[in-house]
Image 1 (tube, rainbow, N blue to C red):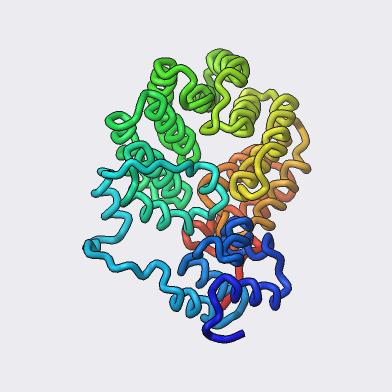
Image 2 (image 1 turned 180 degrees about the horizontal axis):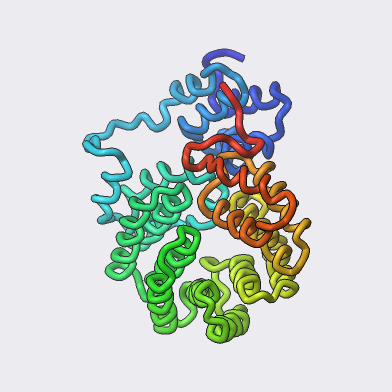
Length: 374
């Protein structure tokens, strides 16, 4: 290997020398394995962040970062250097002049939140009207996952305002529904979230099938957490009945089953909830690491509610220990906290409590296997 080796081929050589597969390295650095494969083949340029993370994991002492720097990628001149940090600058500049629109929801779920956030901010500066709504939603959701609640609130407001002024009723419904689901993990006031969920459902009805089942799912989840059993049961039936009719790329089937399973868990329908959550896990793509962890933790809670407390506790402990640290976020820890509530009197619950106290997404001690020291 030489210092002038192109970044992609050098990355492949270093990875193979370390005895790691693409999937193993991808899990450790928080990137999708298919993206890494494209970088190694020269089909994608990579990024400075990827190079730095790979240097750390592969012990290559900055060689990959140097190779990426020599490639000249991301060294375009910038005539408008932001005076504030990029997130603040992007929030203030949410007006989007171009007409570009790319599907993002699927690709972003394969990227760890701390890695994803700067990429979303970068893309917002050149986004079109429709894309700017989706990007602001994803930024708000990512900030929530990272535990930055005050910044997330501003971005949720920006996403709603952008959807109301630039998108249709379907986008406005989807933004509100996803804010509700994020707000449940954040433990926001349930009456506030119910009002937002009702707005989402009303907008979705105006937009026909736009936004998929997400508005119905959000409302059912809030009603269940409020303890409004009859209304929650009715909302659950509406969600189940509308599933095929409202199928949408923005509302994947596994998300619908997750919501149905979560509502069943809250209502005490343990057996039915386990079936739905297990099906959701089967349908969730393997590369969506954080989402699959959240699904497994929801299943662990449901197992405990169904009377399988040891199995639920064991599942939760395994998920938190095996999950690489870059995927430990608020959504995962909210799901794990719900498991703890369900198993709190069981032997071994103290081990789960100790893991939850570490909160690595807030800068605490590490938990998962993806942690490395430099």
